[in-house]
Image 1 (cartoon, helix red, strand yellow):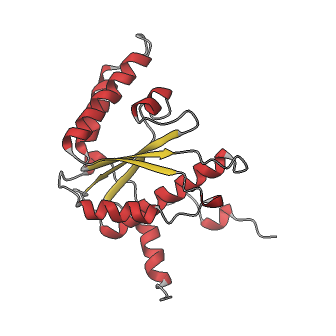
Image 2 (cartoon, rainbow, N blue to C red):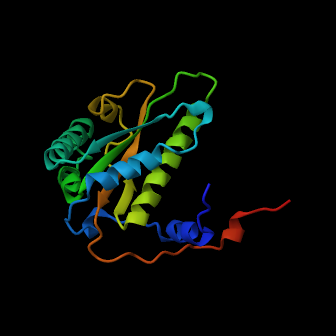
Image 3 (tube, rainbow, N blue to C red):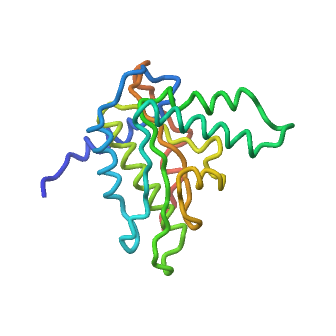
Length: 196
């Protein structure tokens, strides 16, 4: 197997950023690049080879618009009148159209009862990290959002998920319009490590 440079891998990891839809240029993202992101997601580690990730790709403008309308309606239906915010409703409608592509991130529960649900969720998170690192390597902006009604049972219905399945968020994708943001951490990595 050819060895990749540790510097190349490190550079991609350290350049990964959450780039938000308000910072997208409006350019399209090639379907081939999205397919590569999804293919690399499929190589994530997963206990028992359950491959619990399931992605719903909203690439066309019509698909994103339809989803935005349905998401906003779900928010309106499930939010008490006194808590309803019109600006949030409008944002849920508009946000998918600010992206070049929207990928709904789901966990479809495997059939092996010995594997705890948390391990299935962790596997999906690894798959999302693979997608995000691939996007970074391609110069594509991405943002894993868990806002809106993502965790609501109504979202599971909207995405045709089973009772044991979960929606874990949406990956918003677009070409950066304001350059690549600088990264920072609030601490040193050593602050999070205990050697014995």
